[in-house]
Each structure stands twice: as C-alpha cells, then as structure tokens.
Image (cartoon, rainbow, N blue to C red; front, side, top):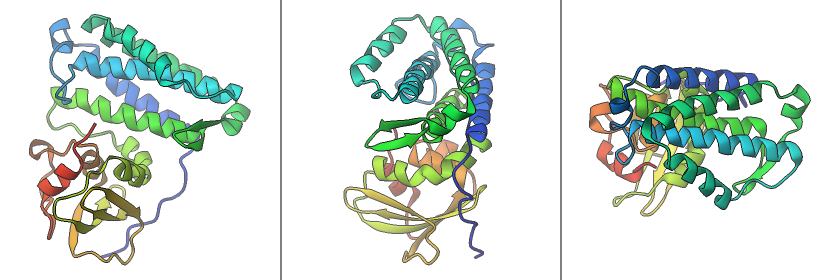
Length: 268
C-alpha cells in the first residue's frame, strides 16, 4: 500500500477562518428554516435538542471571544465560573431564541476575528489546557467543536450528512490529541494500524486496558489489526459518532471489531 502523505504543516489563520465561516454558513442554513417545534426536536446528541446544540455553539462563541480578548491583552484565560454564568444565560432562553441568538453570536465572533490586525494574529498567545497556544491553535479547537456539533444538527435533518470536508482537512492532524484525551481503552487490548483517505494519513492506535494512544505517521506499524476508512469517519469514531446507522459502507477492519472501537470512544 502506498504511504499517505505526511501533514503539510500548521494551517493558516486564513484557512481556519474560512473553514469556520463555511461551518457557520452551514449551521445557519440548517437552523433558519426550522419551525419552533423542529428546533425543539432531537439532534444527533441524545441528550440535547437541536436548540440546545445551537445554544452550546452560541455560548461557545461568547467564550471563545473572551479567550481571544484574553490572549490579546496578555490576561489569563477565563475560568469555569465565568463560563458557567454564560451557560446559565443561554440555558434559560426558550428554544427558538437559542437558535436565533446562536446564529447572531457566531456571526459576531467571526466578524471580530476577521477584524484582527495581522500583527495581533501573529503575536497572540494564551496559556490554555497546560500549553501556550497561538491563535491558530485556538481557532482549530473552535473549528473542531463547531464542525462536529453542526453535524449533530444537520444529520438529524439529513441522515446522509457528513462533517464538512474542509473542516476534516484542518482537524485530522489533531486527532492524536483527541484520542489520547477521550479514549477509554478496551477489554481486550489491541494495536490497530489506521489508514485514512481524504486526506490520507497513517496512525497507530494502541488500545490498552484503560486508555488509548494514537500516534501519527506510523510508517512501519507493529500492528496485526488494521482499519481503513475516510478521515471524516475516523474523526466521528473518535468523537463517538460512528454508530452503525452512520457508518459508511465498505469499512471492514481486520482483527478488531468496530464495536470494540466504538466502545473505546463513547464520545462527548
């Protein structure tokens, strides 16, 4: 099998902003025509309605705006108590208002990002989750959240929907960090060579008894089990969103069961 290309490098601010804009446009296009009853109906996320997913993204836009402001001013990131105050305000809104306000909140956040001077974009730094992040690192976090939760809404309306391709391209190289944080391990430990398409990547997924480790660029993996699938499907697997009804045809792993992998990544 031909070795997939290595990651091309860190995405640019412009690439991330464009993907965030595309994700927002998809989000707004899905929400805008819905009736009040529809926005109060179920999303893919079993515990949230469509409106509640929208509320999460609307409140998230406010929180990420605070993070951007903190990085500009050299201030600490806002704490959990500040976030809880924002979530409480959004939780109290009726479902139609959650949806409408989420569109407006995301639009404001994107406009503020686009207005940042180039020097500010380059010099921006913030200590977050135990590391110092550049602005592109923060925007990739937001893109992951926005693209996946937008899918939670869109797929409830169109069962064939997938996560936006431009977002997948920009998120795929952050999947090791996601897997290492979210993976729960497996009852029967297994090492899996994962090959993705669109874009092409190689990973080594080590499911231990109580944790998962995903290593990128495994050119000569020491693994009996193999998994070949689109990068979009692998992303959703790690986010706990590759149930049987939303698994592309033709994914047939060897020496590991898909249900084992699904159990290792229950999602959040």
